[in-house]
Every structure is written in C-alpha cells, then in structure tokens.
Image 1 (cartoon, chains in turn yellow, green, red):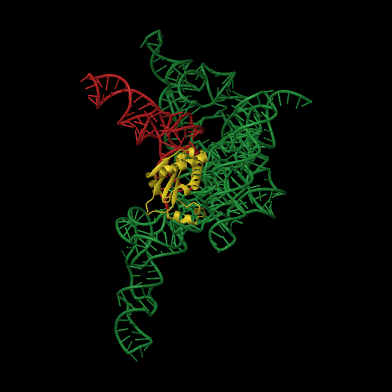
Image 2: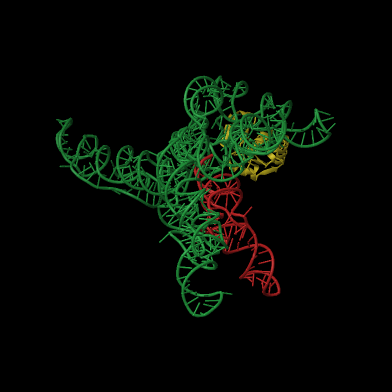
Length: 128
RNA sequence: GCGGAAGGCCGGACGGCCGCUUGGGUCCACCCCGAGAGGAAAGUCCGGACUCGCCGAAGCAGCGGUGCCGGGUAACGCCCGGGCAGGGCAACCUGACGGAAAGCGCCACAGAAAUGAAACCGCCCCGGCCUGUCCGGGGUAAGGGUGAAACGGUGGGGUAAGAGCCCACCGGGGGGCUGGCAACAGCCCCCGCAUGGCAAGCCCCACCGGGAGCAAUGCCAAAUAGGGACCUCGCGUGCGCCUGAUCCUUUGCGGGAUAUCGGCACAGGGCGGCUUCGGCCCGAGAGGUCCGGGUUGGCAGCUAGAGCCAUCCGGCAACGGAUGGCGCAGAGGAAUGGUCGUCUGAGGGGGCAACCCCGACAACAGAAUCCGGCUUACAGGCCUUCCGCGCGC
RNA sequence: GCGGGUAUGGUGAAAAGGUAUCACGUCAGAUUCCCAUUCUGUAGUUACGGGUUCGAUUCCCGUUACCCGCU
C-alpha cells in the first residue's frame, strides 16, 4: 500500500493522473462494504477513507474467474483501467477508494463510449 | 474433374492520437530515440540446464521408470531409418512390440473337464441275467453341448469305434547355411509335434535414474521474545605438548609445579537405508524435528541461449559440420492497451448477370527461471509430394 | 509460478479384475380413523474419452472439474 503511494509520484503518468493502486485484500473488502453502484458494463464500489489513511484518489480492479479465461480477464481489466484513467482524475474525489469489478462477456465487448457513460453515471450515484 | 493420403507454412496489414512496461540519451525534470506475447505462451506428462551445509564418490539393498533392432541427441518415455504384426484396392496408417518349458498367482458364470488335463451325453468292444429306455468293466477326444478360451487345422487312408496311428498341404519346434552391424528374412535338413491366456498381476532379464525445486537459492533492510517442547549421539584419557593465565621461588632476570582455567593433540562422537574411502564439524557439547513470535519490503537470480536466419558440405533421414549475418519481451496484485482511419478479406445479404451493400467480435488463446520434446485446443487460408477412380490425348 | 491429491444414487462412504453395496434422505405403496414408527419398492453412462483384458469402479494413457501445500 505504502509502496503504491510512494511509487506514484515517481511515475511519469502520476503527474497527470494521481491515481493510487489498491493492492491489499483489506482495502477491497472495506470498499465492498461501503457504497456500490451496479451498471451495465461493470460494478463500481466506492468508499471515503478516514483522515488517518492515505491521500489522493485510489482505484482497484477485480476480474474474477467468472469473467472468463486469462485473455478475457486481462482484456476486461485493461478496458476498466482505461476508463478509470480517462475519467477518475477529473470526476473522482480525493480521499476516496474506487473498485471496478468486471462482468462476464459484457465488460470485454461493450461499446467503449457506453462504458464511459456507465462510469459517469455510477460516480454520480455513489457521490450523491 | 471427383475422392483420398502425407509433409510444411501463415494465424490480417499499414498509419494517426492518447496511455502502460522497459533499454539508452539527458545533471534532474520535461523531452527524444528504440524494444515489447505464442504455435501452442496451455496441460505440467517426460528430459535437461541452474541452485541448495539436502555432506561427496563407489558399491549393495530398496524404490521408480523404460522395453523389437540400429542410428540421432546434452538428455529423453522424443525424433529418424529398418524389421515384424494388424488395417486399407492404394498412397499410407496403427502398434507399451523382451521373457508364459525361472517361479508364484488368477481364469467368475457355464461346462464332464480351465492345464504336471479331462469321459457328461454319444460311439465301439467284452461280460452278466431280471433280455431292458438294464447293470458292470474297458476302449475312444471324431460328434453334441458350455465358454472369451477345450491341447494343432483341412482332406484322405486306417480302425471294433477312434486317434499324427499313417499320408499330403498349412501351422509349430529344433538344427545348419546364406544375406544383414542387428532386429529379422530366405533356403535346406530333421522331429508327427501335450506342453493354453493374462506380465497396462507379482515377477525375471537388460538398460536408466539420488532428493527437492527460481515461492530454489544468496544478500540488504525492517521487526519481534531469539522463547518453548521433544528426539538422537556424547560428556572419556593423562608423567602427552605449550607456559598463555594461575601458584611457588627470586630484588630482578630466571627456574620450578601441572591441582585448576585456556590452547594444541589423541581416543571418541556426529553428518545417507547399509558398507568402504574421502571430507567437514564437535571434542563437552553437537545435530535434528515441531510449536510459538516478527516481517509480507528491496536487490540479485533474470534472460546470449544445446539461440535465430541464410548459403555450402557430409548423411536415405533424424541430424552434424563450416562460413557469413542478426541482437530477439523481461513484468512482479503482474506492462504488451484504448480509440480512430485506410486497405485486404473468409463469410453473409440482394440481383438473371455484370455488379452492389454489410463485414477484423472470423479460431484456440496471454510470457512469469530458461531450453529440448510430448499431449491437448484451434476459424480460415496457402504450398509441395503421392494414391485411387473417371475423362481426353 | 512450482508441486501434490480427489472424483461412485440427492448427501456421506464401501467394494480380490467377475451381478456395483451400506447408511441417511427423496418419492410411491402397505400398516393406521389420522400422524409418527415399522415394512416393501424407487432411481447410478462408477466425472469424461481411449487402451490392456474374455470381462475394468478397480490396471495404463489423455481430458475436465474441484481441493490442498510451498513465498
């Protein structure tokens, strides 16, 4: 966790998108217990962290074996990562954790623009 | 032209923009220049490389594997060539393909009998008297029936009935010669010839193999309490040597003592299932197993390798050799992506047709230490060689 | 990633290479005025595909699914 946050400022991309990466099982579990917003292409879970925890926007991705074989899982994860990179730095809120969970068949094949719409809608629901 | 057989290859192409990982340039940042999934990256079924204070080597025992012969290879359970057997008109395909008179074991049910064979019915002969759908003794494996399998097969002779009892052919066994490195094949001679099947049952023979695995292993940092339990072996020798402590003596140098401490030595002990040799360690402690506690960070291993591509030479081939060229992913909760455009396009739709429209979501699938194989998955396409049938010349 | 194991009615387990068995459960029937108890019956491609064998749940090979260990 600390490594992910310390690594982020060194990373060139982090200057644009200060997104931390979730890697701890505990973080995923805490996000799952907080707010959730299902939509067509994926499931969004989000949580506002306590003051003592890390800063900035953090994001995690989950594609279980249900999504498919390794090719399908990786493809779904990459598309989720892409929409997160495009949208979260501007529309996400600092101090929040977001977890995007892939769905079988849909996440890998849905129109990319529709996926982006889904994320916008899900973020509004989670924040509001 | 139709239907097949074998071998090999490809697995959309190019570009723009925005990203990711990584190498280099740059003092740093910005930025610039490169590189970035597969034939199976898969299954983890074999074989290696590499690592290990799991002691080493040889032998024995044990365990596991392989199994026609020859060759290839670092090695293999892989590949190539050959033999034999089975299948196919053929091209060609398939085969765990050593040993069953070394031994042990099993062969259910059925059947008389399931293996150092055997007489239920039947057939034939002899004897008896109650002369019969009878009883007793013997001969007989041709016939019946059972079974997955019944002790050579078919035909003829022969006989009381039969029988390798005799003969011919086929099959089998033994020996010799020839060809071949060999597996094996061919020919000749001899033997009328009881000697099932299963070794992917134990086993025998030959050959091979120690174990664990890159989450191996090494280093750095951080953190905790270096804590507990159990097991195995040992705790010996002494006028040995040193004189370093110590003690006695001397003003001191020096000399002496060896009870005690220390060092050295020896005996002894430990390190594989056993033995031998070697090595290492201990020498009064050593080694091992387990529990408990802390960490879940970083670096190395980590990508130049039995490497790839051409050409030539040797070889039927697998493959080997020589010369020249190439630089070819290295992540680490894990990069190799997103999107747009142009082209090609199997296919789909429309039309009598020319042609038009749609069309990259058209396969299986994502490196994780690295190689050689095997196996499994795979849309569609291309190339080469060969076989059968049909037609033409 | 590396290594190991398992698969048998709905569930949990047995089974020398020779008819797949046991317990609980399900459903149906009998018993009872009704229920419970009791009794009788019921259903398996032995995970899947090949091979060895006369014959495979068992032996061998491949595939699939699930489970476990190792930092």
